[in-house]
Length: 252
Image 1: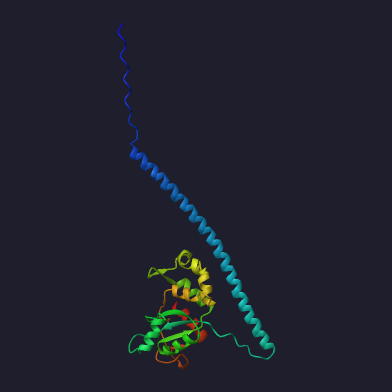
Image 2: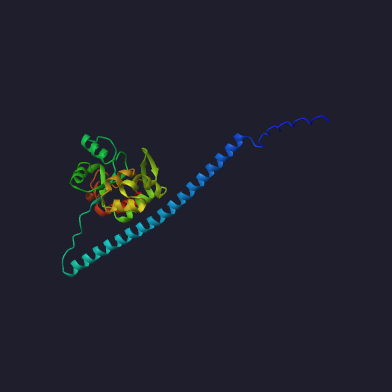
């Protein structure tokens, strides 16, 4: 009987799915897992920030209430002793440009430029000191200014607040717009932090104020009275102290 022929080795089978497709699928799965992890991490950070921001807002609110109560107590004490109570000098001013560019002196133009008031009805927060008060006097015929209260500061930032980001005017749509720029360097991470820093003229006021784009306001309801006259003479320009708040209600 003839010897059986040696068996041929079986040919190697090709994989059912091409290797390139397997690699692509594996890459997609890895990408999806990384995206899910990133989303979960982001959600955790958002939840943590919400809690932190709520705690900060409550702390600031208690601070404002205590400050108001202290003022009332001092007024009553002075009245009971037949004395006058003189409140502390204002540290914060809100300045609005009310006149245009015609016949503006070079020095006045420079002051308006330093205040970032380049258009009519633009407004900015200013820290009051000897230098800024002298600058306000130089540009007085072109501006009106006064001492805003907490409600005015809040309304301006919440309703008309825009910030500088990459040299662009960006609206304050959420707290992360503020956090990504000011949290690390200045510990300002939400709108209430920004309001507190501006209203109390805190140590980081300069950075907070410069971070805000100059406010673009409407012409007041009913129009201006007479721009060429001082406020005390029935006009519009100059210092109107706490009466600026009534004007801001018409302009925001």
